[in-house]
Image (cartoon, rainbow, N blue to C red; front, side, top):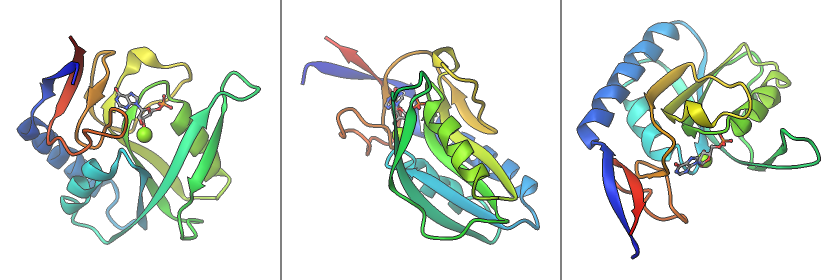
Length: 173
Ligand code: IMP
Ligand code: MG
């Protein structure tokens, strides 16, 4: 391999922060009809940790989307796997690995608005605020990080390294 991985966030730091996020979510969603939806594949590692720490009745689902530049500057979204339940009237929490340009989540927000959800919030493990091309804010953000390409805890480099139990920066030799 022609690259090294430099630790940015340790497993312990991530686990501690996930517990904090889960407790905040638990307080915010008491008595609500919570549906937690993970965006494949990057959110999977984070989401499994997160839901174990939320002591509420909740259901989970997954969808797979990719954003692409279309004829408009904001591009469009391709849903290659949709959720398998009706979310009308539900309190939906979207779980993502990282907010980068913000395009993916801005399209997701529009999509779920049209599905008449009771509420829609975004929970992301990582946020690269300096990279935004559209306005997008996470409601629950694990860590704001600098504009570096990161891997691990679900995030990939050419589909590999999702299983790293920490977040690292890819450093090319
Ligand atoms: P965006 O916010 O629409 O630009 O898309 C965010 C998506 O880009 C994330 O779900 C990741 O799949 C991917 N991504 C962005 N930054 C990184 C990174 O540093 N490492 C790995 N994947 C990334
Ligand atoms: Mg992704």
